[in-house]
Length: 237
Image 1 (spheres, rainbow, N blue to C red):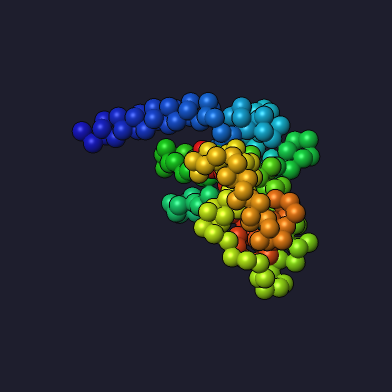
Image 2 (cartoon, one colour):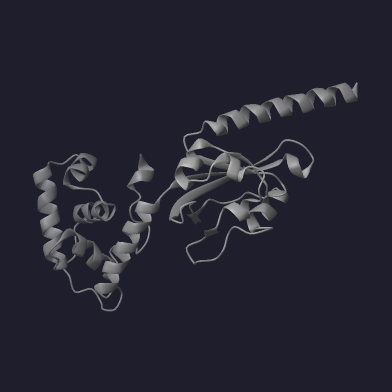
């Protein structure tokens, strides 16, 4: 009785794996799946559109020969025996991270990557490491511009000399740092656009700023905002 039940369970697992494969093929985010030997076994249309590599150029090849990726510190993340593959083989959870990938045409794009590990059988070919990623290149560019503004304003070099901001002004300032305009802030705080403009004018005056970007930069300088974690409004949708 044991062998038939084992065979039935194997068929059920395999059937579930095929359902998962179909779902990943049609996922709304870019998806790349590797087996335990780091060979690409699935590459969906969104990944093809984002990075430019066609399926016939990717499938069956080692992932690190297709993808050239590095992290925020410039460290290579796509390589034989990468830490994520080691963690997958050890059944350890793999945390999400941001990676910069090289496209087929030589461009580089920043993505937010999440990883799922699925074992559909005992062999190396039956270990699936599923990478799901979305483009955050524009978000990264805005963060870099804000950092540059902060550096030009001398972030962290002098103590605060501005007047204290009210709680509401801090809320409005935080939303400005996320790239929200007057109308979006008004909707989020249930205020009129005129009231929001008044708050913006007041906080700009207190910070000695002539533009909204300068206000954000000076807020960074004085420690009123964290230097990172900006432009996250897309994650709240």
